[in-house]
Length: 273
Image (cartoon, rainbow, N blue to C red; front, side, top):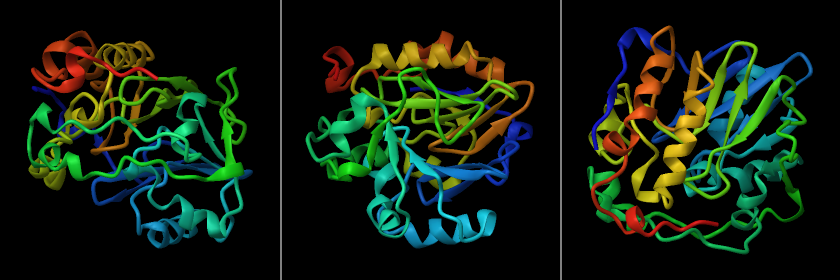
């Protein structure tokens, strides 16, 4: 797997990424919050054990006000790990794509991760990563089918499957800000060294958990067509600037060459749904 180079000039802080958008890195993964005078929404739930850090970070930006909702890009362990602890304090809904609901209502485990995709230590350890569902019960709500996000005016969700069946990315047209989840990364997530150093590079989704590579390619092409100016990824550094649109278009055009693994159980036999 290769990459698209990102200029250091295009890297931006996680806080703020764009107007009203702030982020927090928790070891290997990012969470984001979108807020204005009317309230705020948490995007994803980080790693297990990080609830206290997320609450303190949220208080720095929004005081002691709970979010209006939590929106999940998807429900892999590193995006939902702190949710149950956060929901003990925050009595708020958790919104997901309808295809992702089984993984947060205790009904279905994810397909097994695939260490055979290669790329580094993070991939080789993938068999150890949790894939069982969590059960958030009645807190879970499906995102509206019209693409709106009730607590995020001006934003819409976009179904971007491939990494998971119900993966979504979030887009604000006014300034072309994209919260991408794991549809693609700005680090080589398969490599422990790359994750540790956070060298900015455009890569496809984390390969060891991606189960439909044709859908993943189509999702990246769909996002590239939006011509985002600000990109907030689930893994890697946030980026912004005039070169971002061109770099993402290059990844989309050359996805099979740059992102699709040469081997792996889901490369030729995808799991859908």
